[in-house]
Length: 355
Image 1 (cartoon, rainbow, N blue to C red):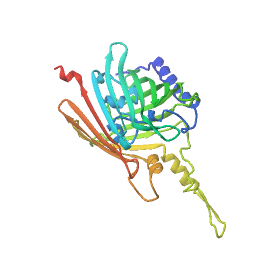
Image 2: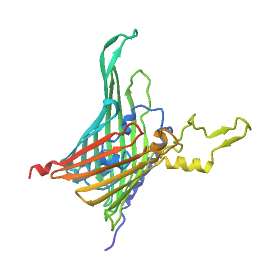
Image 3: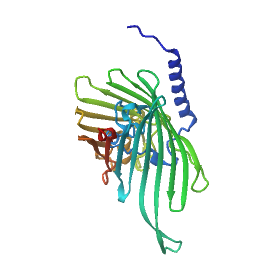
Image 4: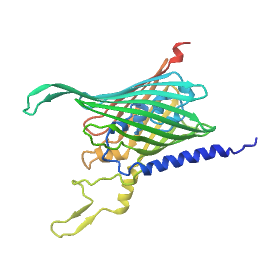
């Protein structure tokens, strides 16, 4: 069978890639100093178990597609996903996601994410109690995905963002753009994602701050003769240096007796910074009804470890189990020695209840 090359499709793909890359240059180079940091949170227990906030895999998991709109497909039609994450000190966040296929237009995903920080005691300037107040963030999402070619898909998300803390309110708008490739045998998947392109429209105090823009790439590969899928995510590609100066662990030290200065090995510093961009994971999937997942986020491990001694910061793990018409995923993410958030996601196909 002869295959023909569709030049128009190739041009469209190249234009989209160039837009994603150019956006990363235009939106800022520093990953710090931004507002709406909760946009980096994932509600998917599957994604959290694999150590990241987004992954690339071509299947019917609608909880994954929320963060990577190019993965939205027709298999998510009438799918519903509920997620909840327990945070520290009684806080928590979660999401509600629904998918719908629209003929000739593509596949859509509608989502609501929230972060609840709990109830706080209020005090006046004289330290007298004056009631309680709450603080919360909300993200409303409309995602769209469609195939551009047999194995190439594109997607975009529109995200109005509302934050309300006591009597202060902020409103912002953001967009996500994504491009994915999935091999014909479904063993390999890759995605390029530009997230949180947008700005604050209404600020807390009149000072506008940038949103946490990020350019990332994800890969996954299913071993053809073994029940394992490997994941790799390259994060924060728009900026190279993800390290920071720790006053307790300086890169340059001086001997107080001899005055000799010892500096960090440049090659080791290069490897350390390179590893901060990488997240790896593995999914053991002997059947469609049962999965076990593990992940490791090096940057999180370095930034959250309590001391130079080994701890489990940066490690994550979880399971996925199918219970009749429900698929339940649970995971635990080790941020530091004190607390580890628990994630739970329940997904179902509403069509199964109509049969």
